[in-house]
Length: 429
Image (cartoon, rainbow, N blue to C red):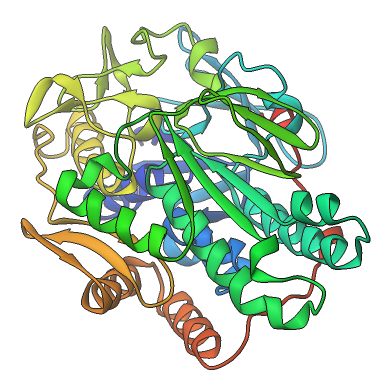
């Protein structure tokens, strides 16, 4: 009897999970599929801002891997080393000794972490917003600052604690500040000593527009929506230094704040640099249109950690977003199966159907089939899209229930600080 071929997938995000799902359909009992991930769930990252604002319960954006994957062996642990020549990976389970897992084909999709810059104080005082723990932490921290601001006798301290700064006007930063501002505005009735004039929200970015991915027209619409709510948008602005209770911007202003959230881009997971595989200057794996890593026909890469040529602009890699990672997963699964003698590979080819950004308070901006939309219709389309693509019926139902409850009442301001746990950026792996 022929030995069973083993495909090991590192990373349980959008790309890794889609690769496993497709391989389950393409291959039979002669192929063992193993997926290694630090958690036993796939995080639906587009809804993290709504977790931070308390609209959605944290567990409802974590989709259990064993509910999505039927034939894949799931190993929970941190991948610590990749031995390309020896065809094995090392991973550390939550308990017990480190283990080795051999592979015949390897798929690397470990995702990304926050991109850091040499800004004094950033690592020590900035908060990240990439995973579930960080989203819960930000929510707890914001509510704690409201409590402390309400209790403060000094006006300067009150306004410092009620000032919230987010850097990065892409998807994550723009949606986050919109959600937090909506939550805080509605929560103020519970804090009698806090007035609207005490509260300040600042969104800063070096770019000349917000949401540059959506184009100038939708960027202007989003900018108008946020500014009408009183959010201070600083474009063409960088951060020069971060302190424990202040942020210095390149325009010279020193903002007193205890809340500084950094969402200005991502960089590949540090694991990629340790593999010895060819990478781009930005640290992403060099891959072809079939997701194969350069000079390694048995190793494949996709998602945030891989530079897959963009079909619309082959000289550039595809953006590190969920939509692209899912489609790359389909391409990767076909390429892996073909390398095992099953079917034929097909090059990555994908044109997005739309881009959607929720701005809370029944507002959103989106581009669907090339048509720009904003307002309530865009908001409904955005939520409908998330419900359509969120895996498992149970998670769809839970999220829909969360949205319904949030629409009918005031925000939940219970601070569960003991449950959240991420802290400053220097603690991120």
